[in-house]
Image 1 (cartoon, rainbow, N blue to C red):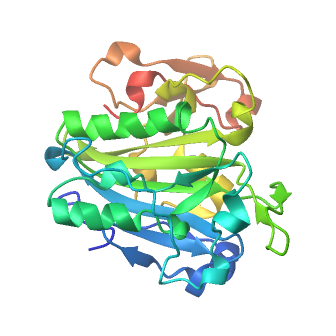
Image 2 (cartoon, rainbow, N blue to C red):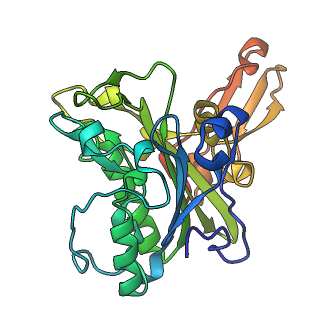
Length: 299
């Protein structure tokens, strides 16, 4: 079974809608490619996924190491080979890692046979994108660890979306003579959706590849990589209409005694002492400000 939009009981978390431009450049007009426990909307123009979607059952995660890692990267049988970026076109003799979008470890829950099938399919080239060689060992990998630990420790069911940030200005490289050029994504994003206090909550994260062109790795702090889901929508041409209102970084507007617009982070914490206010001038109120604390991410 592929991505299940009704995986979280009594809720529906739909795949994002595509802008017209994204739809025009997507494989089969954006029809999801369905694999075991995950789905992909694939860009025929860029040779990688626009968005991936998968589920995690935190109550049934199997221990790490039960399913050994086997790096068997291969073509996705549901997409023409010439549209996919393989070793020769994208990864041979260069520093770019073959980065999973749907993390193989996140598919390891429930029946072991199904886990093994999902793990194997996660190595399709359609689920891989060029990632900076230090990205996974720094913030990106830590975001994935944080999401998996969150669902595991709280026995949560989660829906997770992942994708690259693709722009017309992304750098282009030709890996092998005679191969079509590959363009390197500017960054990567993730969105996790869980249920908290009987309500859906979601959080989006964003990392930029250029941040890792340094000798000292970037440390991970959820509050530093977290962005509003509307930011991800703006950067990607996707629309997360079904979960946009569940983002705890959204704001409500009011006014203080001096008439200045005040935006208060909506109640989304156990400890109201963490709430913060920001007073904005009328000119500033027309801009989008982000004020939040780490505990406001989801819980």
